[in-house]
Amino acid sequence: MRDCVDYRENILLHLDKELCVSQADELRTHLELCENCRETLEAEKELSRVLRRSRPLYSAPASLRDRLLRAMNEPDSGSLPRK
Amino acid sequence: MSYPHYDSETTGIEYLDGLYSYAMVLTRNHAEAEDLVQETYVRAMPAMKRLRPESNVKGWFFKILRNAWLNQLRKRRTGPEISWIDGEDGSAREIAEPSPDSYAALVSKTEGEQVRAAIQKLPAKFREIILLREFEELPYHEIAGLLDCPVGTVMSRLARARAKLRELLTLTKPESSVGKVRNEGLR
Image (tube, rainbow over all chains, first blue to last red; front, side):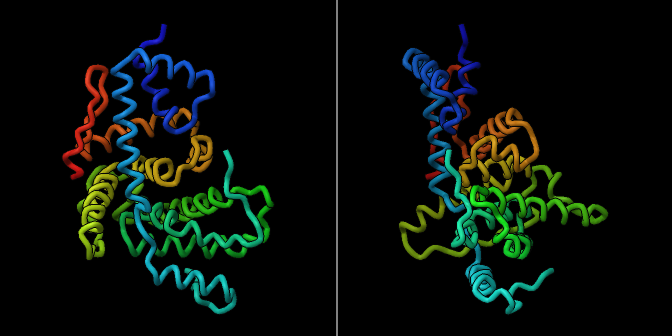
């Protein structure tokens, strides 16, 4: 019988869609019975929600975007000086 | 899992914010991040036409950026600072952000600023894996390929990074007995 520590790792894998079907089914069954693991799942989901609301983490400067687009449209213009 | 594969219309510009974010978590410096991203495109653009149709373009761009960063670190090895092996001091490099001009933007900005500040306090390897998984949504095996490490290392490093980040964001750490989310630090 697996305990909550074993399932803790699978909760993260489940959130990241890295579990196979049988593991996901096993986890789902455990979650129905275990309040602690349900709370862990919710806490992990909340962290992911907070992080994903902050996308993109940084926006590239407009000047860099413009420079790159110019270089893509005019590859021989020298708008991207090689360092 | 499907990946953004190469087609003749692909320029890679769609990955610019992601690459810039990756460069920021590696360098923690806007000017260095900009240089690193530019270097990435300088290397990538001539090679784009040689990509096979099944190529994973996004992963390829991120790999180029990481290799460029590692090359820079090797060149700097005799210098005073090597960010790759840094600890948790985010204070040395201040990162300026533009100010918001609406209440909605302010609310969202506040949370975003806190997330960025928390991530920048993490050790470099944690910053990197959080960016690759939580922001870029790369699958574990692809992160493992990018970082040249086993998938098991990705899993354990990501779990530790998330736990540390949760602490920094004042979200409670899931324990065996308590797991409620406290969100005050983000409001």
